[in-house]
Image 1 (cartoon, rainbow, N blue to C red):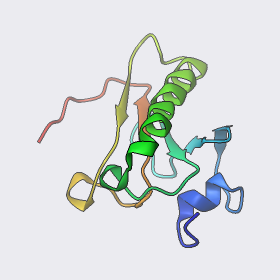
Image 2: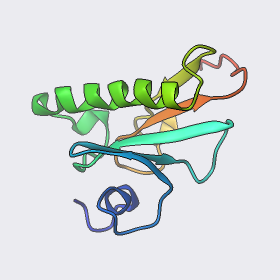
Image 3: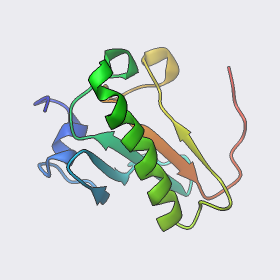
Length: 115
């Protein structure tokens, strides 16, 4: 855990977060600045600052993030209508918290935006 990381604190139960899911590897909670009706963040409990900081040993952990996103999408009732998973890496991609996380976005038609 990184002592100054808000996502590490939420995953450890040391900071408030509207947690939806928690297991030994990942934690999922509602985004405090949602851009869609369903906007949930799925984070590893282990601090990894970004995709660029991943090691080979983190491969299964990051795969588990996606698997948990699928479970949550079903639980939220958006699995059939569609949802988006996004990982931002670095400031130019919009990463503002430097702890790898998957955004699960759903609940409305999402614009296709690339570039």
